[in-house]
Structure formats: C-alpha cells, structure tokens
Image (spheres, helix red, strand yellow):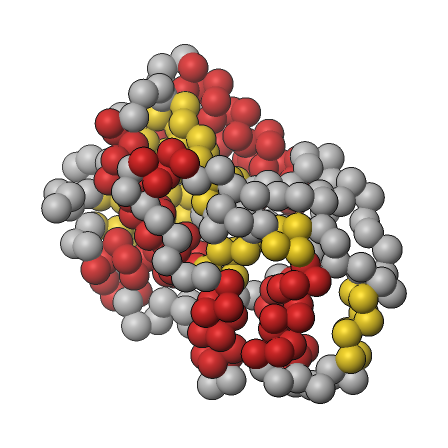
Length: 295
C-alpha cells in the first residue's frame, strides 16, 4: 500500500481531473487543487470541502506550496484547447505560462515529481498542440538539469460519461442518442486508440506509486488501450449500441491538414509496472451511453 502523499492537482474541475481527485482522496492522499476563479465546480461539488483550493489565475501559485510542509507531486491536467475562440496568446498563457510557473515553484519547494498530461497531436496542427509541445520541452530541460523528475503522459483518445460536449467522442454519442437526422463525417479511415476514463485514472495511480523506481528524471508514457481502431468503427459501434436512427454520412467531410492516420499507445512499460487496460471499446461505449442517458 502506498503511503499517503500531498498532491497538487491542476484541472480538478475538468473531466479527467475530477476522476483523479476522487481516486486520490479514496487512496488517502492530501490534495490541493488549482482552479480558476470562475471554474464550474459541478463535477466535484460533493468533495470540494475535503480539499484546499487556490485560484491560480488570482493568486501566486507559490501560495499553495507555502502553506504545506511538503508537496510530493504535481499532477497537471488543466489545459486550454482553444475551441472557444481563444487567442494564441491566451492558449500559450494557459498551457505554457501558468504551468511553467507551477513547475518552477515545484522545483523551488523541492517537490519530487511533476506529472504532465500531454497530447498525441502533431505539434503544428494548432496553437493548443504547439503549446503542449513547448511545455513538454521545458519539463525535459529541467529534468536534464536534474532539478525535478518530469513524467510526460501522452494521453490517447480518452472518453467516458460526462466528458465535454466539444470532444469528438462525446459529440458522436450525444448526436446518436438524440437521433439527429444526419451526422457529417470524414471517411473515418484514420485509426485512434480509444481508452475509457477509468483505465486512464488507474494508469495515473500506478505511475504515482512506481515512477520513483524507474530510471531517469525524464520519463514518458503512453496511456491508451494499446489497440487502434478506425474512426468509422468507433462511430458505427456507438450507432449500433445506442440503436440510433441518425444517418451517418461518411466521406462528407475532408480530412483536416496534418491529420494523424494512425495513433496507438505503446503500453509495454506501463504493463511492466502492473497496469493493464480493463475496459474494451464495446463495454466502454455501452457504459458511457447508459450513463449519458441519465445525464
């Protein structure tokens, strides 16, 4: 059994962060969350009283460290996707500026490990992807300077009930459940590694417990099912499980520039640490649909 740790968690009000928060609390860890002043607390309103919370867009992040005897780990999941028309400068500040201040504070206060949630996207696809690459490079620099252990987590296509409506997986599921008349899609030949949120959370738990035993201060792990399936197969599975009447218009949309045609996590190292994917695509979609019907 892992001894309790003191963890600073960014993005705790988000989809992944809220699931991680519940796991950390269930495991007996002390959790400090970083949020924005106007964050929607609906995902964590039943547990917010069990954590210390700081608005990192209003106060210096050092404050979260100063009021603790020791912070053992940072788990960084907060991000700005740029989907709401945010400027490149806003995306940069959210995905590089603020977390860089957090990283430097962690170094100053002798925090052991910084866990960074990264993307699989091509770095020049958009401002979000570029900013994630830039922050990873900062983490790699500080790890090579032996200032902190930086664990970079390349997260594949996570999905699950209650995820943001702007996500492709959620959009498809909600559209099929609503029986919208038609759904315009690409040909769907590109392959993705879809991973259920519970499996992602358990992977973070394994890493929190065991990265200290792994060599090197910069470590990188892919979290996914380890199996790529086509976008078309994912959509058709959602359509079948939901018994939707929506017409699927495959091929009505072009592929975007720099489209990734194949993405699949290499989970060998994670498996060597004792992790394994427990939820297959069919079951994950079914569980998501069953829950979404009640939301």
